[in-house]
Length: 192
Image 1 (cartoon, rainbow, N blue to C red):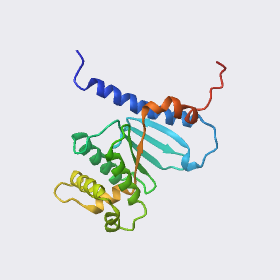
Image 2 (tube, rainbow, N blue to C red):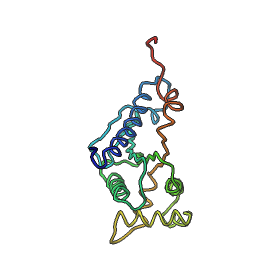
Image 3 (cartoon, one colour):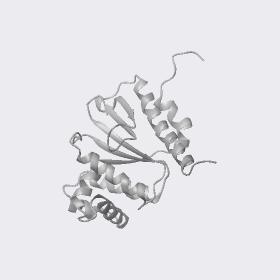
Image 4 (tube, one colour):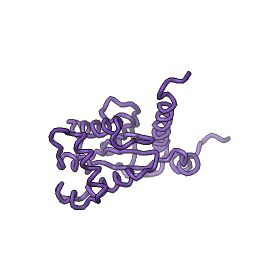
């Protein structure tokens, strides 16, 4: 008999490993890139708050990746994810050039709201300006995230500073073989 959560866990591991493998393949690609675009280290299950995949780039900036095939709004996984993001951003090792990346495998309306809120945070001069630029859905989402970070004293400033360094991506695993492998992993030098 299968353990409860086993298939979900295995699927999540496959999702994480697929993402990491593409990044490792990119390290093998000799195409000239800017130092800020050349990955020099890929760590899976790193000893960090956001630990799924940690990418270090040649220019020294670090990208902390949280992968979720699907995450339900207001679930335990949702709450923990925001707590981990905030802890990583608040850590002494997090630099202004570092980024937090949320990679979602399943497309949902929450993805749109997250991506939009993160994109609107970038370039705002303060939290009030950002709040004014948010959609109705974005405000609801931000209020929920604020409550996850500090239930007693939700802070728009704390959420804004988090969203300023957040990138939200959609990564459908089914597209990997057809669309991404030929682009991200160089041809073999060994004849078939």
